[in-house]
Image (tube, rainbow, N blue to C red; front, side, top):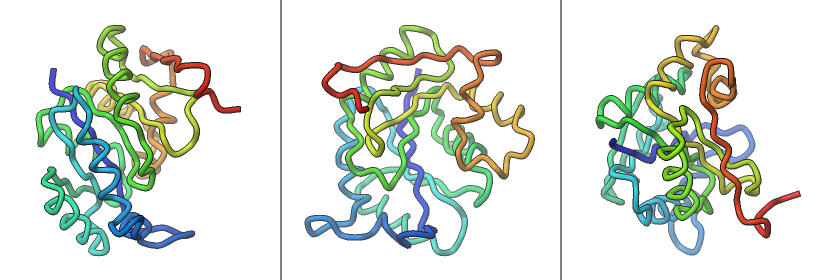
Length: 183
C-alpha cells in the first residue's frame, strides 16, 4: 500500500495573494510545511500538487528546491488533480494537506494513516484539531468514486464535502488527546 502526502497549493488567493511564498523566519511558508511533511514515517512520497495556471508555475521551484515530487492539473477540478497526482506516483492512499497551513503536524498524519489502514476506511479525518493543522487521509478508490458522484467536479475545491457521505463511504473519525481538542 503506497501512501503519499499531497500538498494542495495555488498562488491564487483573494485575501493574501502568493501567501505560500511569503517568508516566515527567512524562508517561504511552503518550505516550512514541506520540511514538516518530510518527518512523516508512513508517507512514501510527498507531492506538491497545483494547477496548470501560469501563476502556479513558480511552485515547481519550491518542489525542486525541497527535493519532492510535483504535479500540475486542472485549475478547477481539485479532485481530478489529486487523482492525477495519485495515479502518476502510484499512490493507493493520499493524505490531503493544504499549502497554506505550515503548522500541519506529521505526527498526527502518521497516526491518522495508521488508523485509516487499520479500520479499512475510505476517508479518515480528525475533527478536534484547531484550524490550520489538520489533514485528511483518502483512499484513491474513494476519491475516484467521489469524483464520479460529484454533480460538477469543477466545484470540487472543497473536495472533502463530497467524501463525508456515509451512505457511500466508510468514514473514520480519529480522536485526539483531549488537551488538543479545540472549542
